[in-house]
Image (cartoon, rainbow, N blue to C red; front, side, top):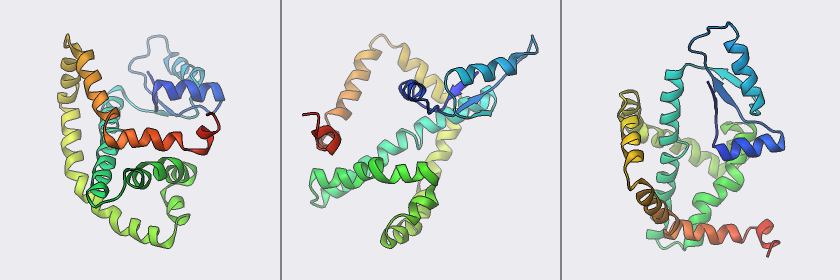
Length: 206
């Protein structure tokens, strides 16, 4: 097994630009004696920048937790919570979106990717540093029970069962489209579409 740590779209894009993307790999049984070498070769062939060993079970548990947690579910939920809070207190849609999403994706997360969280903190204002260092433990402790519940549901198979049942429903695509359209058409992400169109690189295309 080779499991790239990213969406199929990004795996392809990174492959084409030569940057690669990290992947985990695992061998459950090795009848020929060459399984590990072939697995590593496959990882290199799909453009993995770095390959790290795991097991099939650990890959399932970490991947399902990550998707539902920080990578997607938690990120989407936390963004929505902050956006709604700012809107409730009279901030404009543009201000709420820029302070919640745009600054994260266009500035701060790039610093984290470059050299880590401490690097991002050290390259921000002292006001931002102090606030982040004081508040991050509170957010960590607040969401820890949710992550405990999430991991239990992943390792028990409950999440897998939920996915299989939902994806096997005859009206799965219609329900999925409805859910995705609700996100797309929400004020927050309609604002996002407008903000993205105003980025300098996108204005040049008009």
